[in-house]
Image (cartoon, rainbow, N blue to C red; front, top):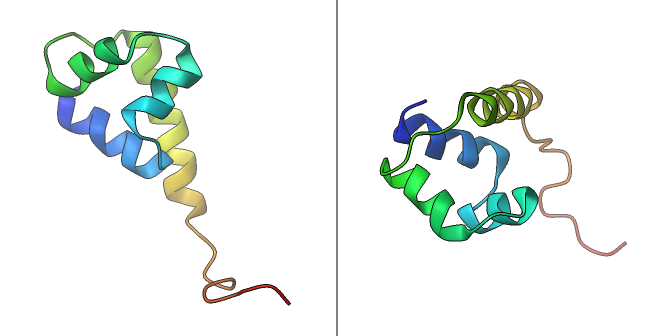
Amino acid sequence: MTPERFSECLLHIRWTPINLASALQCDLSWVEALEAGNAKVPDGLATWLETLAQCHEAAGVPTTYRGRGHD
């Protein structure tokens, strides 16, 4: 997985590197290294992120609720 695709997957999932580090319970600095291309994304992590990103891409975001407030 390229650093660009790594960042793109996080965008689709709507996670920041901090969110990913929290989910994985790992050091933020390692996630930042993955994002910058200074460390290789492990195959298992790449597969997991691709799966999540593809689900989010396919599902999209509902637009029905835009502008809603407390009823």
